[in-house]
Image 1: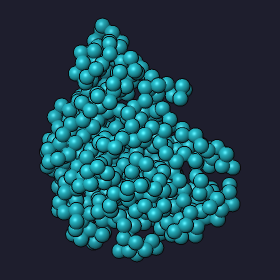
Image 2: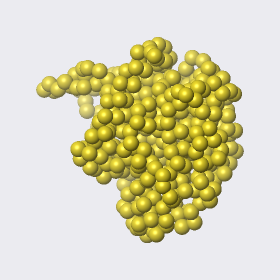
Image 3: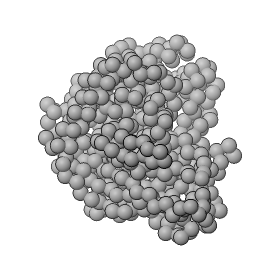
Image 4: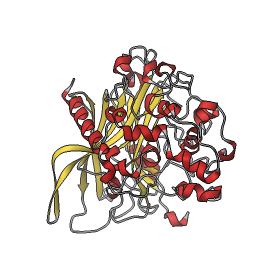
Length: 469
């Protein structure tokens, strides 16, 4: 096994041991984008969402979108929202189902701060291009492809789009974003920079499930907030096992962030030591809603290869707290346990080859022709069947709405994952029917900003104060 993968396995084993003794970790309230106590204090490296879908205008490619640094108030100057320069931001692909990355697309950042002792301003005049002299705070990135112990540079000194500090500073941010989109050798492209948060939901789900009477709904809590986004568009042949998306169409996707220990001196922090995973995200809302408070920090350090060995996590999937909470508040009976259907959705992918109750072959790597089933490991990641045709009129409820291209088969920007997951927890994936009492969900059915028709598809970052929306 390549050295890099062995190191990942060791870190996974350490994290599993941490989870086993995680009862000592203090409890904390969960909320979207701040799903664990420790990472809430380091938002620049906090993974918020991952999306994976066949590109609607380039169906021979897949677009991967990963977001970090949630809940950005657009007017939050003067330093705004830089990428961390002591971290590695990763997008991982597992095509053979062993829960170890076959390919990691790794981003690292450098800062070019031209303010010095002269000014506190992010920019000292209107910025009309990404190289405008008025732009005083800049960040560049390197993108590398890591395959075991082999590393291939893809982009050197790429320019990250700056924070959108307002209409006077950035009269045409769309042009800046276009300039921050770079080509990748082999037919791909990449965008790094801010975007309007693509996640839409009413976060009062955490107020005892929409106030206990479904009256706390119809408010997109994330309206007006931005995130830091990495968007990658890559040919399917780059992502598929053995480069063959026809024989091997299913991939698993997750993001993570790794940081080094900081040595603190007066006025200075120096990174040192090995990189350690501090954040992780695959399927939406898993660490927020499935994990208990006691294991959230440890889950962020656990790699997918260790998931199936952690009974504390498996127990939460097989007997989800959310279903019991809905029964307690709304009187809707929780489905019988153990929940093999949720194990299929979150840990194996939907397939008849794992013996699960959902009788369909949709998005498990076990459906790839060249996968060795003896090496397959149940693990939490977002799984995408790249052969599913693009839907002309997407259904926001994805697979539960009869749209096989939607979540949990990958995740499109338009998928209403909160309503989907609540229905799945209530057994809709087994029965094929929505639970009528919860069918309207949180009544936030689409994003407040229209998504684009071409790469990177995400909405332009907001430049208005959240409290003015």
